[in-house]
Amino acid sequence: MHPPDSQYLYFAYGSNMLSARLQARTPSARAAGIGQVQGHALAWHKRGTSDGSGKCDLLLTGRDDDWAWGVLWHIHWDEKPHLDEAEALGRGYEEKQVPVITAQGTLLAWTYWATDIDARLPVYDWYHAYVLAGAREHGLPPEYVARIAAQPVLVDTDAQRRSERWALLDC
Image 1 (cartoon, rainbow, N blue to C red):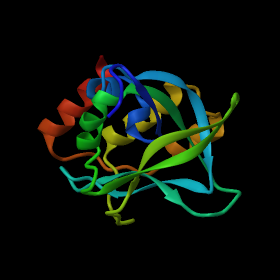
Image 2: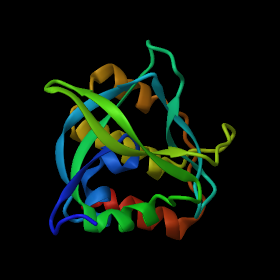
Image 3: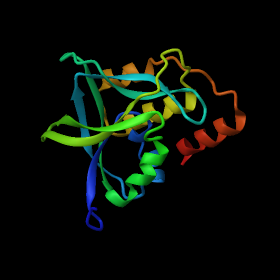
């Protein structure tokens, strides 16, 4: 049990870097800066539970020269079940704590990692746009943003889903 209004630190590296996306899921979320996790890489191979497309993963490589950037968030503990549900905890993602290196030092934060992966999955254009917009919104390093931008995408052929997902970026 956590005291009322207590918060935890969350490390987002994919679509949850975008403030509008994360705050729709956890309204208390407040950005706490950016950071990087050593020995991990951004991968786009997590199978989406609702559409089967590729989503982001914080892939453990174990190599010291691999780094994944992301955004740190303070979120109320009572909203964690909402984020766990949105992230399909136990159904494609598991959670772990990772040391995040920031300009202020190393902080321990909760994050999700993929268990249902397939490197052949297409990445939909709207999902890629969420990740790219979040990286730009929070000022991730330009070379890292360029790597995100270079990810090949596929136009989502489900017109209704595509329209609904793109609407989040129009707010």
